[in-house]
Length: 294
Length: 252
Image (tube, rainbow over all chains, first blue to last red; front, side, top):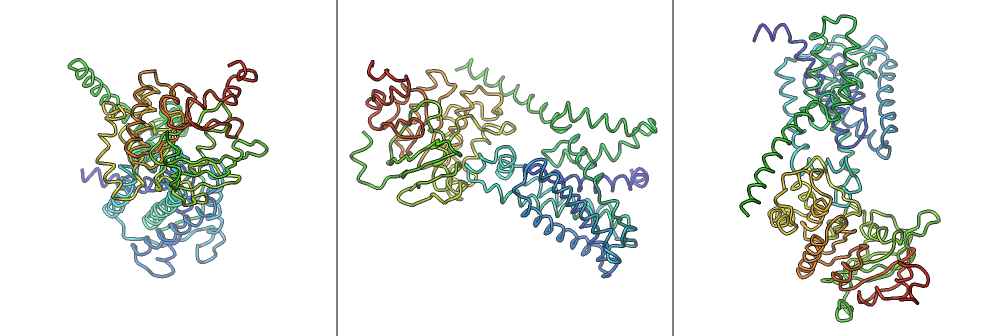
């Protein structure tokens, strides 16, 4: 186990940070908001943490925390600005936000290191630290997925008019999703940057949107567990299919296409459906027995 | 039966000169009516007469062009839709609107999620009783898309009543149900009425409306054309004309 861990520590840590990034995109989607601002938050969190360490001499965790708070505030402010947009328009506006962050990083002079990026921000982070942060994030997300809060968020996503009619403040929930997405994206960016000791504008780009989206499409968009499954699949896939060599991207694209067409709720959705079907069969059998007796 | 005795008191809901226009289309055009506590009111009218639009306006989901609504004498015309539920007005929709990924029980509990804490606690404790009354207790763990349309209607009905609203607005509550089920729901409406829940029903089924309602309104092209005792309203010449066309009233 220990040998396996040592050999795969980079992949394990990448899985965890990819999961954080995927969650930052999944959260607003679960609230019915087609926002990719989580990737911009990744950039803000990463640059803020790096600047705090390199220019201000801060230690690891205050730097990461500052990045998460600032990205949470900025993405919340973006939410205030774009909250009336829906669907593709919301998607375009938030992708533009991400690209603006990248442009700001290029033009940030000494503060951001310009096009070459910022170096030397090596934090003291190990897998245990990331797991601890993920545990807190997942605990919050589980709270948003279950019981009354889960019901209300599902209603905000599926039917905003129904949500209004049962007393749910749709705008408030959607704005909260922006803030939460910003904080989680900021954490992903801060941790990733301080693990690698560097961040460049090229890293804060559209490809991260694709990484996060494919993870939640394949894994499942309705639960953190789906994002986890997706992160595991896409971080470990290249090593699993290394035998296909230059066809790797084709295989990758094929898997995403198949998942999008045949698994609309991802791998997790299939598992949940199977469990529900099994339970339903038991429930119907119980009802049939009751009816016979009655 | 509903009326003269109670009309001296403040109306539970007063609708004053309400209009809802969509561009040049006058979906609702100057409706005024009153509803008093403990009665079942119904509104009849052919398709496109503005019944559902009026119901939507009452819950503030549909914006008003003019007029106002008063609940117990308090003007709530400018209150946002999300706060109307908390004021004690609950509704069902013309087309069933449920969360297909959630169980029947969860869908019903949604109706009490945003109510004040005490009301919420009491409602959550009564969820089994509500499911029993509406006839969905045995399918509590199933998902709505596994149920018949009539059963889905019942789930929506249960969601609307779980918080014990003061005014229950029902948009075609028995659509998709067979005769026996309609009678069952009609009986439940009467029980709820006896418990003090005032109801306002939009429905096409004239027989059901006459059997269930204490007082009937009739609408056509956005206007109120008759109101009063259900038997009188359905015989009213303007109502017959609206449903059957010109000449029907004189021929009837």
